[in-house]
Length: 191
Length: 272
Image (cartoon, rainbow over all chains, first blue to last red; front, side):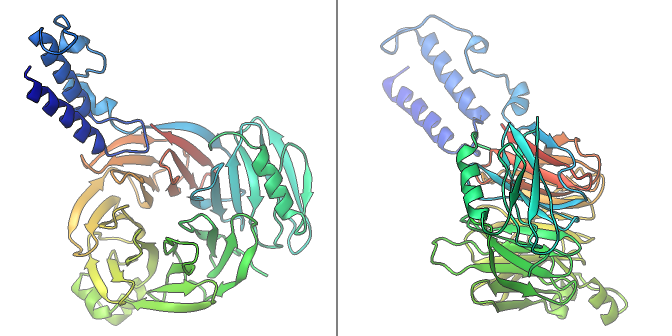
């Protein structure tokens, strides 16, 4: 392969990778793989081009080569179920929303049970509130073997909010901020 | 004292992650800080059914005003509320004539038009220039936030449109409707770009991936579907929910998708 042609192939790869539609994921588009495989085959078939000539290799044996018939199944974004939290609320959940930029990630859910709960992923415990209406204290009970920790409760009824870290806790307005901070430091994982 | 009486209809998150808002079924909007979970202000109390969907106007800097867009429900308007000032700064009213021209309204005159005039959902473009609202009559209306003018109106759907959202480039509006379809319209012209079908019942929630090429949807059939906007096809269906799915949401980095529905279950999924 002439030197100019090699440079052109390299530019094609770079350009395709830059145009990858999912920059936040590990997805790589099929064209990138095909271009990369074709460039490798072309280089190996020419034999003497390049500083390190390689013997002839079938394209289908090259790492990363995928037949176009299967590429649409392999290079499309897929979802994998991480956690299923049953009975997250006492009634229908009408709205869910991630908190942008929060680390660890926070997920807010709003439901017909008149509560909004903000959850944080945690493989150790899950908290469930037993809210008392009005300005009374809000009691929190924790459970194990689940994948969410109830980060805070925005039930808003009594401005009560708090967090859990593996034990039953009782929170009120006064201790809310400290409790949140303590939980934030104690949680691992990217959510 | 704030409350979420009768249920939390809609949640919205500030683009900087500092604030969140909830709208209860009795049209009481409350805003709180995400770091302290302290309530901001006294909230906004509107007449019943006068507020439905919520969306924050994106803030580029922390000093930018905290503006919350609201779908006006039975009042058939879109509002922008300054949370810190506690006042409504903009109101975008739909012209009945324009609505009928786009195909909205009923055949039996103004009474039917009023009955169908119910703003269900609102979305603000990521660049903050446009605000989109969808209604019970199937129309999708886009307004210019700066001038207040109606930019485009689309009658893509034949039934109520319960959810709208912008693509990350602010060029397109993605909608989900009771006609089981997911539509993509151009924000500036109202031109239909794509229509994706696959749900067996109402589409109740849509969310565009931050990459802009994938849409997730939740429907009354209990399914969460993933759509490739390039090929216009459904690429995956998640059937873990046992009842209708009201809402789906992507995390800001696009690595997680969450869904919730009538079965009281929250699903957390990883995008790969």
